[in-house]
Every structure is written in structure tokens, then in C-alpha cells.
Length: 330
Image (cartoon, rainbow, N blue to C red; front, side, top):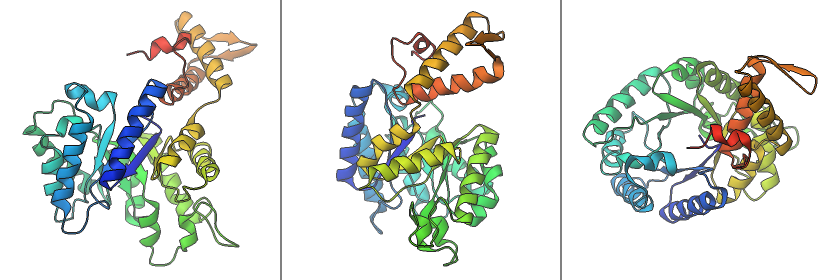
């Protein structure tokens, strides 16, 4: 799964994002970020049906050149629908999982507070898939946006249909009825105010989400950074999210944020070379313990260095000439 998930809710921005995705696929030789087309916040009130139809038509047009169900693995495009308790939730599902069902890499489910929400969504999704002709399973990504959801996050992460959990910072702060200051929605607080990396309740929520994901083998995706005109702040926030809080993926809400996020999650070339050397040596030894540069390595460290190579592959840092590339070649 790419380390960046780019959101857009207006048709012109969707077209621009899909074009940029195609351009960067050609540049890097891989799909280095997801595009998620938003039917929730992006849809005008009263115009939800037309918006969902537009999104479905757009993804079909964008992916027309890719054959069949391979679309979702070659070029990753997702859709966010309304919450399960919204009047148009089932309408969203029927539309986006109609003719365009095979195009989606996953479906984002917002404002999930419990396992019951995921169960209900899965039932509606599966019913729509059954009549769509899609054979590939459709992973569900979940947005954790409330104090109640944070309390339930381990059970939500354990759900077999859930592939990833994202943190909805803005709604989480708003759900506290003014108990958390607006500064907690920013990267850095002003004066003595807390920012999103220092307010205790916000940091606790992020850690709960990250820990739950790692406990159940799911992908933790970090929230948005609104300071899109400052790429250095975006990259620094992404690095903190990854190195301090354990997130392995992050949202983008502006095209200028994509490359800083990729850079933040990309391992250094020296790390990639070290990981490649150790993994290739270990493979040659049938995964028995080995010594490299005077240090002992066994399956515990192999696991770590394999993950470095995975991240390098996801961010197009792993060269095709690298001997470890063969492990990831299609």
C-alpha cells in the first residue's frame, strides 16, 4: 500500500489528481500514492446522488486503459462514502459499487464508532458487490474521528474486513465540545498553545490508533496537515508521524503535499543498501543466522530489514538493478 493517500472532493481537483498520479507512475515506475475521491465532504447537500454518479463515471474514464480487475492493483483509486447512519449511505454504495465496482482499490468508511458500524457497512457493501460482478474482495478503510471510536479502536482494528485505520483530526477535536483548542488542529501551536503533536488527548488518540493497527496487522494512516504552502512543515510532520508515533501512511489534501510525504516515508539510500545486502545474504543462507560487518543477524533482524525493503519498494526507492528487487518484481 502506498505511503500517501491523496484526497479530493471537487471534480476539477479529482481530474488533476488522477492526471498527476498517472504522471508520477510514469516517473517512478510504480503507483506511489493513492487517490481517494470523496463522496462525503465533497458532495453538496442535496446533490449527493449526482456527485456519486460523477465520481463513478470519472474513475471509469480514468482507468479505462487498464484491463479488468487488475485496475485496483496497478493504479490505486479509492472512494470515501457517507457514514453508515447517513440517509444516503446505501445510495452511495449502490452507485459507486455499480458499474465502477472493479475500479476501486478500497472503500473509506468515515465516522466509525464501533464494530457494529463496520458490520453494517460490510453487509451493504457485500450485497452491492454480489450484483456488481466484481470478484476481488473490497478492503474497507476506517476513519477514527471521535472519543468513542478511540475507546473502541482495538476491536475495530481487529475486524477482518478492515485493512487500515485513519485518524480524523478535525472531527476528533470538534467532538470534544471546545475542550481541545483549535491550535490542536495545526502542526505547531502558537504561544503556549498545544499543536497536534503535543496536545495530550490528540497524541493519545494517535498512539491508540497506531498501536491497535500494529497489534492486528493493519495500516495506520496519519491525519492531514493543513499548512500545504509550507512543504518543510508537511515533511517534518510526516517524519514525526512515522518515527515517533508509528504511522506508515499519511493523508494529503493538496498536490504539493504528496512529494514531501513521500520523502518523509522514504528510507535513506544507505538503509536500503544495508537492508538489501543483509536480506540477500540471509536468503542465500536459507534464513539461518549470519554475520555481516561483525554483527550477528537472525530472523528478528531479517524481519526489520525486509520491512525497510518493502518501504523502499512502496516509495520507488528500490532500484530495479538492486539484487533485492527480484523479491518484489510482479
